[in-house]
Figure 1: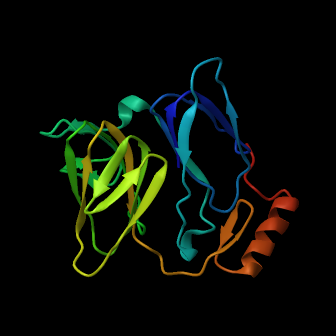
Figure 2 (figure 1 turned 135 degrees about the horizontal axis):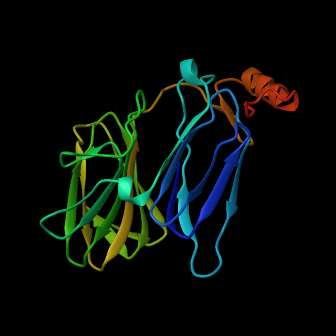
Length: 216
């Protein structure tokens, strides 16, 4: 999942897909049984900034057909709370607003929050989900814990926990991300993520044999 905060990124893949991500846009890509993917900056001036996260697939879906979707800024639902917090709902659902993406099994949840000084934001989360907060501007407090810029806070789950409250002393930008754990083994090598070392070795052989998706 690639989220552009500022700048432009062109992507192409071996199945013949191509697109341009710009400010506020998201690409949600599923590599599945294999695709060769490239990302090239197209920035002439100014700042280039963004985030890229990987969402694991359950074992039963590891070899599904490759898929992707470009989501432009205007397609991402936004709302503003009574305290002036601007919320972009990339995935999942927040305060009754459904995000641009809904995915099965891991049920990912992805918010970009713009929190004014002295404001707070409360979000309910399923107690079964793993969740974290990443602050990329300003700083927030979660309970008695201060989380400054460029730091991540991993949230506790279970034990009756059902959400989080973020309080900002200064204007802040924050990602709030969560997902349901698969509770499956993970094997990883370079860009390949499978469940066993044998599957990783097979994925490498498939790549070397040119078996990944190609344009028709």
